[in-house]
Image (cartoon, rainbow, N blue to C red; front, side, top):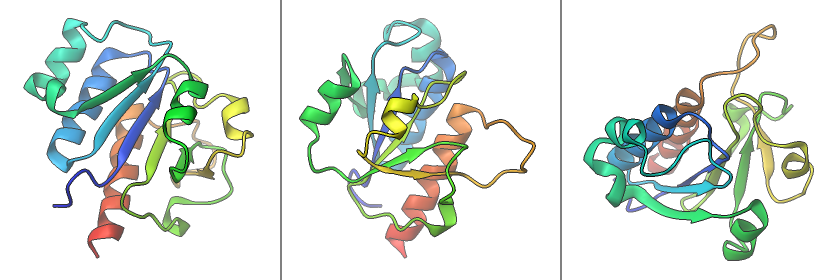
Length: 153
């Protein structure tokens, strides 16, 4: 397993168990976890801790007050902005160790200003056309494991 192969970034997550599940994913894959406010819960929330079990202190990297603060602190990072509306598909993406995989809030996805801001490449997970979206923790798992598969060869 690669040490800290990717950083998984959640922008304004709203559902504690989803974020806890992503924390557990980070614990078993070695990925780092970044959360960007505003959050729909407290990071001390018992549902968040329960879903992430005892992994939370081992995977949580940083909480940023805003997208701009995150960008300023991670200048030069390669970012993949996951959205159901991208024309570029996950199977076309070529991930590299150290990349940041960025996901939006459960009800809305990434805000238009982030998608249009030129701070990453938009990428979509293939779905049936009539489908709206995947659950956040499911989408993060799919993206993370495809990235890991590519880097491990």
